[in-house]
Length: 122
Image 1 (cartoon, one colour):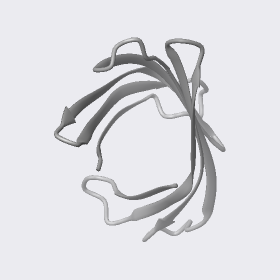
Image 2: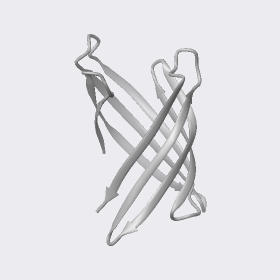
Image 3: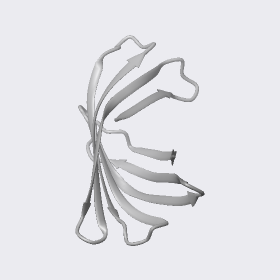
Image 4: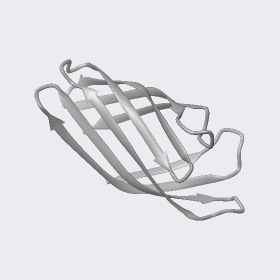
């Protein structure tokens, strides 16, 4: 299960995203992660539910650093780009770091987005 609260820098509006995650190891050193999400913005005139999804494909031979390719899709916004995934063991917990850049695939898409994520598995 995925839950995200967001707010853009310098903006009053924010949003919430809920959805499911599915991860599967493919072959010896490849994995795929899919997200099916529903987002709702708050504080804007067009407050509505928006279905979104993403797909992440990674080469998982290394336990620490893994290169990947990500796709993000929404109604009028489709992006794809490279990513780096990293995991570090801290005692019995695992610290996860992900960073990437995605480029718009259509004229209606955002030109480019940067993404980073920091998480911990207890």
